[in-house]
Length: 381
Ligand SMILES: [Zn+2]
Image (cartoon, rainbow, N blue to C red; front, side):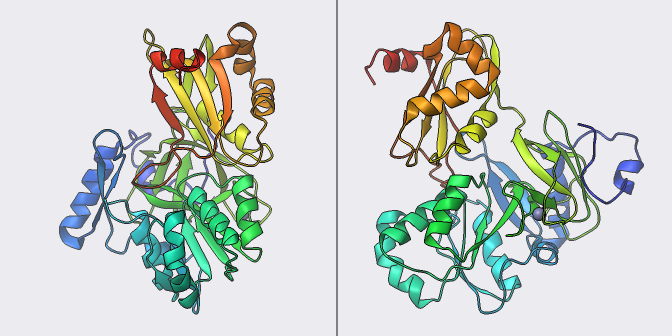
């Protein structure tokens, strides 16, 4: 895990000290507030649905000029329907408005559009000449389904996604509704905005670092360093919440990487260690599995241990037993658990999963008490 990703060599900010301590969020916030005292900026908040929001001040231009110099999903004549949620200081919506106009495209700052609101807006969407969409992948897939069900044939040529994984099932849903659409992805955090991007030529899951950055892969979370000016936030060995690793991409662009998992996503299950991200990733690769969500039942005795794990998923594949069997076969620690406590891992097919009320991203994990598990196993819920 020592290979660095990035073509900037050893930047001065890292060379001046042998191994400067990684930046915490407090360090990053202090650096952004220092800059904002003269340059101004835009507050964004992360982690708002549970616990205290983390605050960061983005550069006044949100780093958009730096991004569009290397990644330009839109052009003159395009009209982007921005489906990222508005308000509550979540930054994505404002970033995509700025991205569109920086590309000399027009943007429709719609925000979250629930399926039941679709009917009242559909004529407006057609009238504006929308030919590009931006949103979290599950939101985009639901929009595509709603549009297809309504018989709406929008001439979508670009779909811009971020914020959660783009899975094969979501791609299939998007391509069925919008066969001409190219997929443009990006990866970042709410504290850093865009770190890497993908184009329609990229392998699903592969991204490329924007030039001028260095990533040090670490099991505890990759470290990001940014060199030079123009970034939405500076970063010096800032610890990200994800594990990243170098990757290959057939598009041939430099500095390819992929997101492996969240850094803190292992839970103890009856003696084994199960990666939440791996369960999601493997389930999402199965045919007909769309959105996935894990219900974790806390062990009342042992911190970070669970006494039960329930995978809930949506999509046309209704065979929950086959999904369960495929996961148990593929993951050794689930297999071991299955031999002595099979009831600790269950899989259910559902019509829908829970989403964050703020960002509409699918909540990857819902924590429950061990008492809730007893109720489920007992058939009471
Ligand atoms: Zn690529």
